[in-house]
Image (tube, rainbow, N blue to C red; front, side):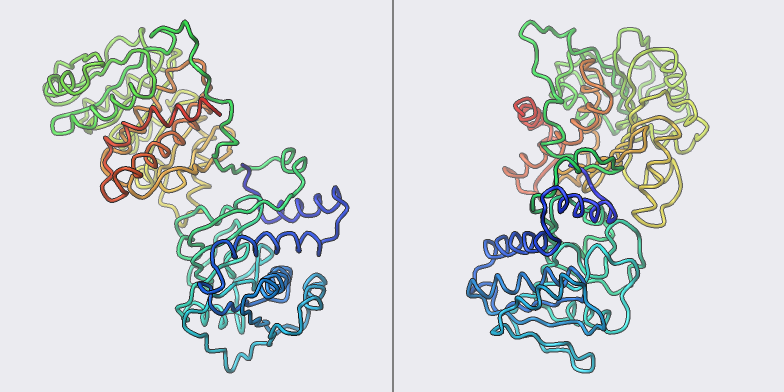
Length: 505
């Protein structure tokens, strides 16, 4: 699914009206009816209480007026409040004329804003994607009044005061919605941590925008869902054998961190790798052989951490980092691995301590082979680049980093972002807060290593499938354990079912 900018959203509306021969107020009516049906399915008349709809002077306000009419005709108790303005959009004026006289419609008095009754539901239709500057004056005062009301707020399209795809001062007046409902495609603003307290939960409702326009337009940002992944994960051939799916090498573990090697190894095996060898210090040998008998253990001479790089000829992909430690001897192993990878055809996955070693030896970043896959969390990513000023700046850093080093970079978190060598960003739709637990990243590394070992998959497809299946496995696990009780080993157990779902699409 594509993520449009505010300008592209407006262009999609225009293309739809032209292709379908409809007016802008008719497209607005379609969106308002869709929202109203969604709202009525979510909140019955008794549960919604009085519905107070706050409308601005533009098309977002027109949406609110049309919603007010639909809810009123369905029996809801509706009160409309209008933001004072000298001018109104033409579609606003059309919807104002269509509002039944029985619906109270009052212009807000900035000197005495209305007292909102307990149990009321507020609909925010003040400003949408057209907003280009922070709210001030009466508009800002109204937003602050809504936020202080304690009522449930539902935002139509965007919480008023929030920009669709650009940073802003977070002390600005911005509606703090319980839920935001967008149309057709998600907006970048929905996906960023700094906006979470404004957006709340969010949903996107289809309103029949022109699919040819959506298909043909080029975007920088994508939302990874079932539609995007359909057909990307091939079914296993009937006469496949272990060599079909490749031999992977995992360099992981150190004294006190053998568990990271175990989790990554298990995830790699459940991710479908044909063969797995784990290079680990001798202290982890018995642990690994007992916990993961399906993997081969190739022990390092050092008892506590990895100090030597084995022969790399047998392997289609190499993963390095989980529980590895950050000793200087291990940094030298990473340096040798990067140089050998540049001269060979195996894929490379870098995580955890290996990322921190890159951060402390930044000269090694210039030796990353093309299509290397890195999996940092935000702090690890800052060590590779710089401290981000905000979430939008972090995405700019991610794009620049991937383009400069021609690599793929999985920036972990809610809506994990995948950066690509061509500058495109992909935001994952699966996962839950229960996955914020030690070892979850090691599981992701193992899964990605398995998928990069599978020569049937492109680097992009392997990364997309990996982040989606990892999150989906966490969702399946949470259904059994609950989010609070979820541990990394639970995610491993559901990798197979998550990948199985992908095959069937």
